[in-house]
Length: 116
Length: 113
Image 1: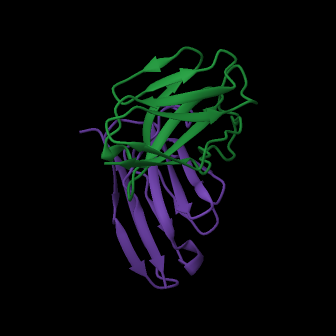
Image 2: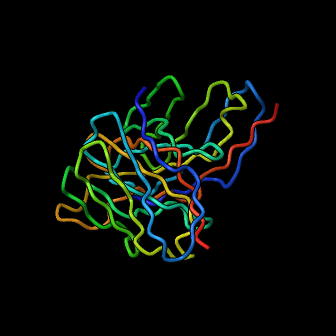
Image 3: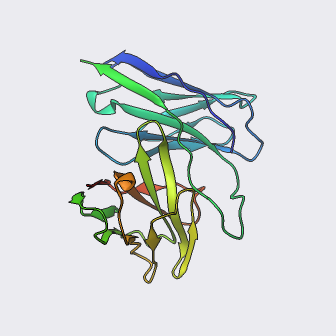
């Protein structure tokens, strides 16, 4: 799975859009880009994922660069409840058919602070 | 409501006293796994299960056991807990593999004295 790089923290104001960047320059053609977030004192929560085209769902949008070496998670109108650590991970096909470690690898993520 | 539940949510125990953390999902998922989360180390997978009666070691399996006798349940067993197993534990499940959307439980905070 390709390594990802994200800013340690970002700050935004409530009800404004937030653009969270992620670099994944070593991504391979079969790797999907996934975003999860972890709110304080909760388990990680799936946000969105995509392969090549931009994606939208009820939570967010995912904009993927044409060369796929970077992507941006867009929260269109941030609320205080969106304050969380956001993780970007690249996942290829499962490598192991006969056992071996198989988990998601979350880096440090981006700590998103929302100001009222 | 589709969810992954864990019990207990908080547990304080002493070294050597066997304990079990339960995990249950109501989404008919085949894949289930356990993670621990420690400051500065991120999420690390302990064990996972591709289906009933099929389990495999993750990155940090030492000191833990699991079983998968039913599709919905995946308990984590600490036969002889030690202080270095003090951590925040998450159970997760998905339809097929680890590469598909993972649904995480709320976490179990364990303190081993």
